[in-house]
Length: 618
Ligand SMILES: *[C@@H]1O[C@H](CO)[C@@H](O)[C@H](O)[C@H]1NC(C)=O
Ligand SMILES: *[C@@H]1O[C@H](CO)[C@@H](O)[C@H](O)[C@H]1NC(C)=O
Ligand SMILES: *[C@@H]1O[C@H](CO)[C@@H](O)[C@H](O)[C@H]1NC(C)=O
Ligand SMILES: *[C@@H]1O[C@H](CO)[C@@H](O)[C@H](O)[C@H]1NC(C)=O
Image (tube, rainbow, N blue to C red; front, side):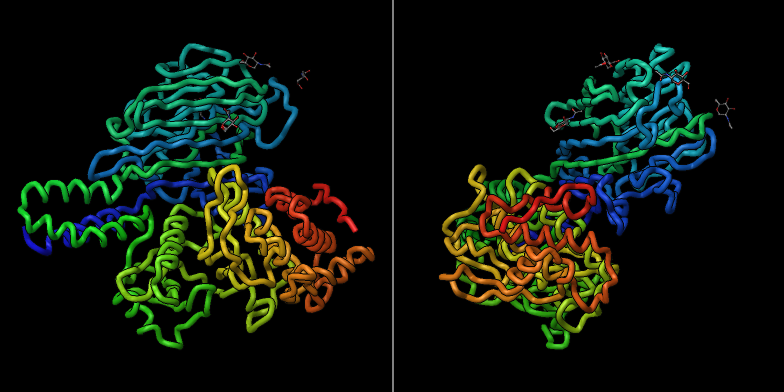
């Protein structure tokens, strides 16, 4: 065995795992389309077929699953990226679960069963990516297949409200739920229901697939509130489903053109089917050891430390860059490419050699590489790799082979909120600011509630809010992210970090919690509304008095908080929105953590004009 073989093997494997395949391994998202989305960002995750443009008004602001008026037509809506169903190397399969709610009668409520719009139905499907709409697939074919006898590999959960002779189970009057495997027939897996059970209101469903047991389980909450379930045993790989599959909804329309189902919410999460790199390495190493002599054993021991380090930061989505690659991309970290300085180091614009790669932001972490910084780095990379949200800056990769550690992010083109509020940037309109407030709220909601354990950001401030070319906000700089211990709700014994102008004064005793993120969010809201910088003084005796929060609070108690609005807006804003943003900001910066709202509540107060906002205590 040659001396260079093992590193070479590593390279080949990394290339295989990181680059070759476009499907997202371990995909996870969650969208509630009923939350107001003035920027129409949520719906950008979906690809409609045919493209229905701006027809969402017709669907009450949520997602149209079928908005054409053409009889016997079909439509699809699918997620923009494919999901990885199985691993090409090992054949290992992914498990997934998805929840969605929809309404076959649009958002109209109180319909009675004799006047319901009549339509064949809709289906959740998994099939070839990119998805295409077979011609003549309207009616009972539900947009899934163009022909009653030849079927592309597709598994669908159908919600059928119209009986089709010949391929539906015999139930001439009622609705039914079925599982279709490479066929429009659902006879093998079907549940008959009463008329109106699916069409007379909002229906929600959970679909889970366990690759270990091959069990596909569907639980449906019917329009009348009761639940029913069906299940099927199937191996998606043996059923010839593609490695990278489209997921989405497919709908068939019949004679009644008023039939226009809508999608209200959708979440999805799948496991990564790939064998972790370290398992592959260990098994390669084991066979190498068998074949090789003492020399190989020696090589193994000398390199073990390096492998251990590499294994730790192995991540499902991002890729590892070499120092030379990043140095070349930033023109040797030249001054004119410097974008700014984050909490842990300088950030440069990078243009990678590969023309298919969009420009990136390369963060060079300063400080010597002691074990704490290395640990932070590993934390940042592993945590960030699991996160995916439109309002979080995406991690593209990392580099740990040169002296300084580096992180590579997507480049968010319009720089930071701080520069637009206080620096060279352009003055943001109120509509833009309000959207920024909601965007950052959504990002925090994802961090706090998106996974089993809340993730703390710990350094929320305008400097860390990046704006994209449409001035939508993304929260970045996760150098300080920590996973909170379950049940504890806060992390003790960690040092105080972050800028003190935005920091919860209660953090000085060393405990960060979701409530301390809420404090920083509150300060950010006040800054967005007033256009003034937060100014805290480093005076622990007086509880770090903050001139911005106290001025706004005084004005609130005098009953004219709206006067605190940024004068540069020239009064060009929605007064009730302004009052809400300022009041929610004040609620979040209350000293008593127990009085601060949780992020979900804060978003409700910010986005819903009829949601009650509590009075602030004196
Ligand atoms: C729609 O399909 C039905 C049943 O197959 C058929 O009777 C009807 O003529 C079709 N309508 C149109 C407009 O194609
Ligand atoms: C449902 O609508 C039909 C037609 O408009 C009407 O005759 C019937 O009384 C309604 N049924 C109920 C329960 O409201
Ligand atoms: C709802 O519909 C199901 C299926 O038709 C039926 O079994 C159940 O009794 C109904 N539940 C209620 C609360 O009406
Ligand atoms: C789906 O799962 C969620 C979370 O476990 C649960 O709250 C909800 O009631 C389930 N819905 C149905 C229709 O089973």
